[in-house]
Image (cartoon, rainbow, N blue to C red; front, top):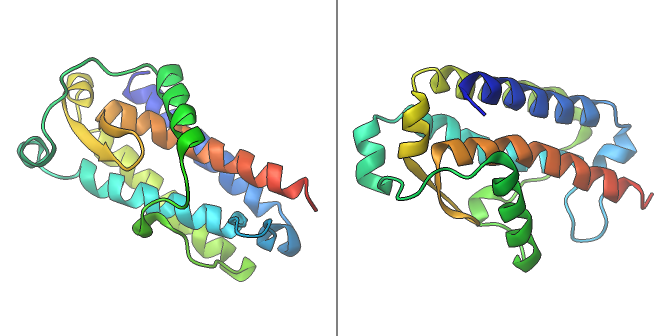
Amino acid sequence: MNKVEIKARLEDSYDHFLKFIGGLSKDEFEYAPERKWNAGQQADHLIKSTRPLEKALGYPKFLIKFKFGLANRPSRTYPELVERYKQKLTTLEGDPPGNFVPKRVPFSDLNKVTKTQKEIVSGIQEKLSKWSEDQLDQYIFPHPLLGKVTVREMLYFTIYHAEHHQNVVKIYLKGI
């Protein structure tokens, strides 16, 4: 995927997620099996995981190189990255690191959550414009589950992440 495709897929993925949760009733929005996240918490988790990416994409490249290094391999394709993420999820125990654990989000905060996520995605798209195709494969960011990934891979993950959490909500709602 090139930058234009990444920007479009980011927007589509998060729009689909936000429209999906926006169509839920209050009971559906706030429902989750015991010790699982409801739709509002899934949304908050996505905000907590996309906000650092938006910020990091704006860092000077020399700082990213200094702090995280450079890639020593080519970027994985989107399907390869998704498959790697799914494999890592099978061995995951417990919640993600604390800064990614969501807070309770009442149904009344749906519009606020939607607005915030749209602003973050827009910010990612805007900052992505300042990256070349080569730079997306050259620089790396740390991912809490996947380890060091190229910026392109982090963007691929971010696209898939919304789809993943939408599917999780759908699965949980089958239990109602």
